[in-house]
Length: 104
Image 1: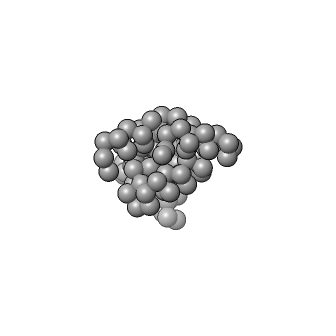
Image 2: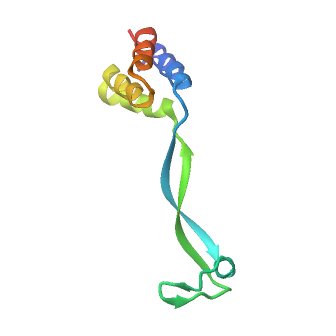
Image 3: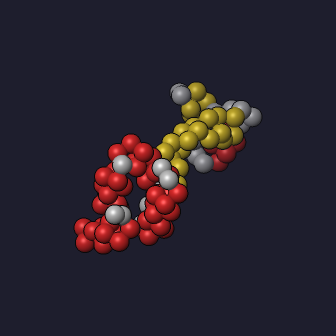
């Protein structure tokens, strides 16, 4: 991937609307906090206020469009970027304008 292609991908990434994606992340929470939150049992055992528990919690982050499009370009070429743009734009007309202006 040359520098001109990278610049085009960066320009497209700035135009695309922000989107969030969710993933599960392990967090640690004290037994005391669990009791305050109203949880009295974990895995059918009483909660110990002095113990630390690990739980999965959903985390939402902003998608890095540049990184995702770069990966798509490496795998599929400019067709991958076109497919990515069409997935994130609200109307097909908006996607076509971006594609015609920024991609050859």
